[in-house]
Image (cartoon, rainbow, N blue to C red; front, side, top):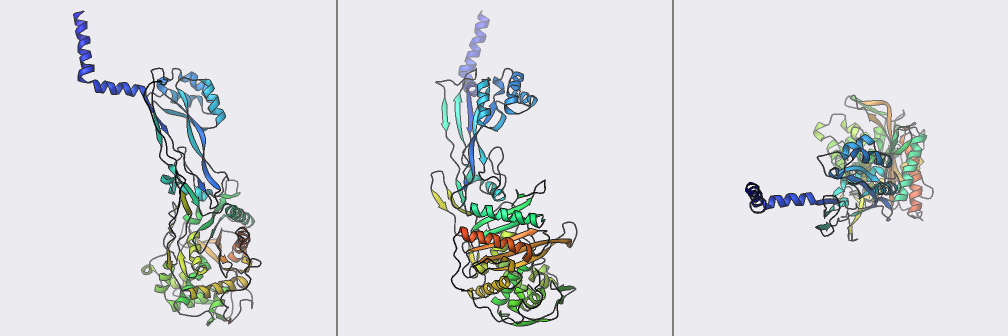
Length: 563
């Protein structure tokens, strides 16, 4: 008895005198449980307050394996309710290395009620948010997606993850050996803080129409896909941003990746907008100057040609743009020179990202001047040998529309914090590219390109449209050169030409036929007509575009080139 008493005494001294803290901490660890409380993710709205993405309450089913006495029985009862394999549930319920395992995530209210009715020891429910897009796949390539833990994995959900996610909370409770909460035990709550809301510049109604119109044309032309971007040329706000591809069944659908920012293409003749703007700004030529333009031109080892054969023509600078003459544009670019052309292309925003910060955005391709070949002045001036994304190209066209200023595109209009206070986004960055006089001259020339040139299919009844067609070959991904018979059809422009309220670019990937003026321009007209009604832009009462210079050889004489 003395020996037993001595052992007990030594043990008590060890527990209460020598190392009480260690044992107390072990006791607390056995009784106290910390339950993570996920924060409600902020919502994403369009410019008018319509919800594009929000979080709805769902349930997670979890278990503490240490409290599960019959893993096999629990698994058999839960499998039909949760739709999870019985063997997998049994494996999770028998896990010895964890006190917390998920059995199912984001289950609906009915399944959660059925789990509660089973009253299984060690199995519990936890509220968790689930991301929901009320309009389905509308603008999905812009919004992006989240993983089961509500973390952004693509698009704006990823770009603004920290802002949208909020701050998780936690609940600390004390439980007895039977797993029940001790009523008078320790209990601490740190409530979660809801994430901020994003208000985008996108208009939901216009986004829907753009996606539908683009998908219809993808189907009609048997194209691989398409992109379209609508903007306010003065503010730089993106009003719609659509990327359409084909699903497994070949049906056109909004794509998960935002091709309008992450993919690039050669702009083709749309690039002539920048070339001729530089020519006018540097006083190399004026819109009325007339040149003799042959149908081919040798530049170094490469022979450039117009889209159709013709005898030498007397064409004004205006006609060169309206007819989309490659040879005429190259002649003007040679007078300008490669260094000055390269400088203007960079001022127009080429060779760098747009500043949107969108995940995976490409800055395009604009080789350094020292890497240019003897043929570069010919290819670059007509939109070949360089690459842009759709937003980048439209931002360049906006320079002409708004009077000569490059305005950085924006997608987020404001942020609303957890207290409901709205914080407007910083104003778009701006820099002057060309003078207002040059922009007005270009505006008049682009109006002519639509009224009597290659862009006639972009006309909108009651309004003057300014724009440019483009048809560019697709570079091969497997060899140096271009894919045979593969083209990108493009149209970019703005309306009303007098005081632009809307700018828009439409790009179709391998359509049939493949001319931008034939397949992309009509989509521009359809979207523009809808947007002008939506934003209640009245037809102008009088023409305010700078008067057109006299043409040396009007585009209407002879066959009109296709582009």
